[in-house]
Image 1 (tube, rainbow, N blue to C red):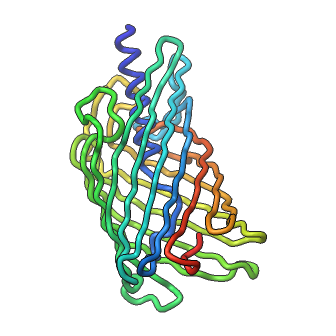
Image 2 (image 1 turned 90 degrees about the horizontal axis):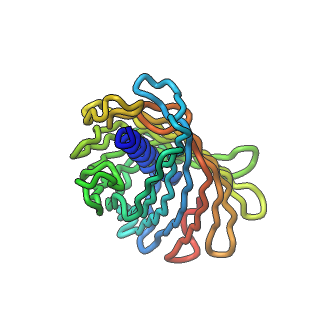
Image 3 (image 1 turned 180 degrees about the vertical axis):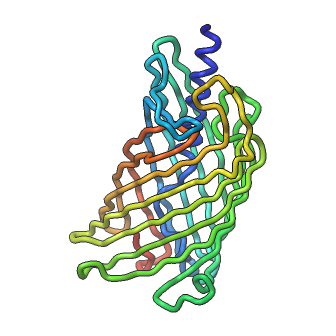
Length: 291
């Protein structure tokens, strides 16, 4: 009985990690950096939940008073090699855990690390200015033991191809932007391939404040491994819809960020949310793209 409960607990923790690591922080992917310019974003997320989305999308309560949680620290960087080509780094440090009335388990270490490039193109091949567009290639590599029972990620390499469009505009007299992107991510190992869609919106307010909102959706292609068939979460085929909102405040050359994220719908994931904080550090000169 205890062995079964522990297996169930770790299944819940892994599902939470898939949930939280699946969606990146809100940032505009339709823009590239100018040559010699860039930005570093350091962000920390705290997610926890006492419920999950089952294979039929229904919400259920974790058994035995279960609570799943993930702490993630993310360092994201962009650098403009040319005015059309930007290189990207996306690095993760994860803590994942699950506890109930019978047991408590956790693991800590580096997660999947990603590197890639973004190239400026005409948006959708035909949209005129002020629309902008870019294509992106991102490669992910696990930096943990993929055979461990308590691993810190999906357990395989990934390649993502994405196209993004965006534009600035005025909202009630304030400078704003909209950024929309879609792509496909191929994975090795147990997790399924994914279709990914994101929409990000930002508006500058007064006194150096910017408000940002993001909707993200991942649609599994259902080629992942089915495991632990007796568990409420029993497959690495998963879907997720998430909302994030945050407020940024510019302080001289940097910006600080505080926000909250919430899972709206899903399948074979945890269901929860939590706060996040961030520090945005642009470099390369005073004329840089502002969030």
